[in-house]
Image (cartoon, rainbow over the protein chains, first blue to last red):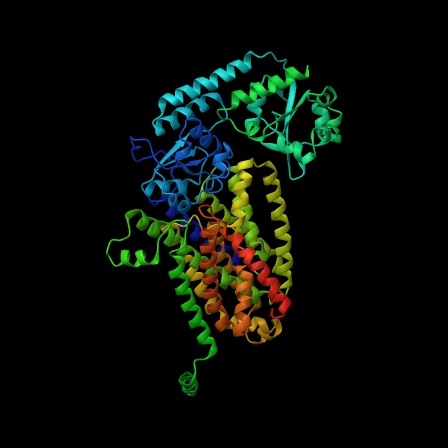
Length: 299
Length: 341
């Protein structure tokens, strides 16, 4: 047995060494952390665009360059024209050939797009790739709009869009709201999930002036009826698809898990469009206004 | 000497069916390679391919780069993966004397999955970390299963140990999955469905020697596998030390399929269905079953990859999905026809 173990270990070490040596070799298609476009960006406005990331697509359309987009990814659901374009699939796992087959002038990708190998290979093929900041906060949104506007050579339109977004957000903040405890629920796989502290939905809740009681959890987690009762939220935000899945707003209020929460008892249940709830894009101001307006109406 | 004469006589009359089958498989593989090289989201016609290769320069630079840097290494990976999966599947079926065996039975795929899940959830690493972790996981799980199973005198011990290891590994994976973020969950899902998208020449260059050596050694063990088929007692009386034999076969399978699964993720059904089909046509003699499984496995994967690249263009299907979608119903058909041996 000892002999077998030793032999096994020797074999494993040998094979692992090969792996390690391979990683040290300066192979041309290894992972590179900084995948900023190495080729100079074309000066004239690019004619064929591939956009990877829902927010990126939305901004390209908002800047008036939507007609230039030839393909998007699975998560690009707004505006509706984007859903009619060919899709390259999941933006964190783009197929190289699929993207190249669209013969884009520029690939505009969210910073979360991947895998890094595919992005590197796309660049190695001589296609211009621009990664844009894609975090759920306002500075990132401004950055994103500016970066995209620069690539499209529509800087003026970019500044205008930023001003519009700021105006909407400021107007939203001027609307009075009482800070209440809130949470956002989505239904997935027949279960109710709550949005945790590191989600985009969390930012939407907080920007609306509410307090997300689920900041302690990460991502979307299953919320048991007990946990919901313990959390006792005063406001519940649900997505439109959740309401549909449960069979209407009245059914939502009758859900055993939700029925006894202060939110349902006082009638503070807000239905929010799915994309607005889960993305931090140019319509963030609109989302916040919507929530505050709904709260004001309920008073 | 007389054996040769008999063989030559037979050759002159007709090529033995086994040789013919291997020849046909090799030719089919070549045809498949030639046709699928033109398939993909990116348009490259066969005609422009040949004129380009002949130096007439009809192929523009982008097409050339797509062909040589992206499509060809991917097809090579499909080839190697098919060979490895076919042969290791046949080897496992011989080891367990059971036509339902495949490398996943001893926890190899589950271990690789756990390694990958750990890498995806705990680190933000790329292909190298995930691959190494998957390989390590495959080895550890297989070795644990062996340690547990070797105490019993027949192979069912190994089977039961494999089941136990699989259960434990899946539970551990579940623990990781519960903590994973949305993006990590999707990464895990895609990893489990298998993909050849990570194929680059360095990766192919690294895998090929490992896999080819492993496959070569496995094929050279055809006599041992034939002996195992007859039963443990008979094999023992033929002079084989069963413990050593099982250890050798298992190690070869782990070191051949392990690195492969580490790179490609889980590709199911090829290791199960391909040796079956081969045995249907050629009988159970491993002298022919092993090389034929290698060729047939390569054929299956090259064709599946072509489908994966084209059917939803510009998006791609994970290859494990294609092999399962095709292999599953096909396997049911085999069972219904009663031909499964």
